[in-house]
Length: 167
Image 1 (cartoon, rainbow, N blue to C red):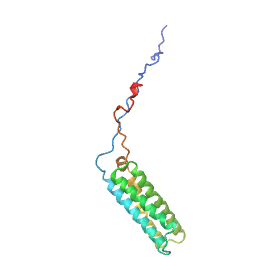
Image 2: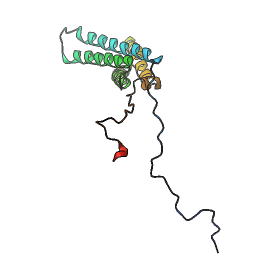
Image 3: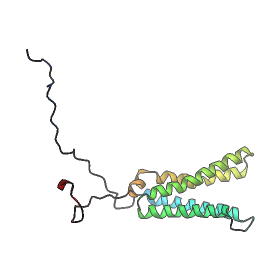
């Protein structure tokens, strides 16, 4: 008596070819609206870093390591802003890192000043949080990430390249 099962016992035949992959979306040709704002906030972060370097430099008037650290952070923020402006690969990552470090430092200052009694210094530190938060929020946004995505366009197999089908 034949089986009454609707499924066949024979294995389903599969093609030896791989399934077609979805096409990658290339980065947009024109700069998204959020990119200039991310650049402005990146420059604001650099200005805040330079202001911090000035505050550290003023009492002693010497170039110590603790003065050079904010100057290097400002250069990092300007590099990230320039990379986002030009649409360079991974520019959003550089700008996000340049915004994250001052954000954590300023949050530590807010907590420290809050524990010590708050006052005007705590409110100024809270106000300075606007730059790193804006740079971080805009650089992590999808339009800026797509704008600075590495373009991995497939190149045709030329004389120096091996074709996969020829193997």
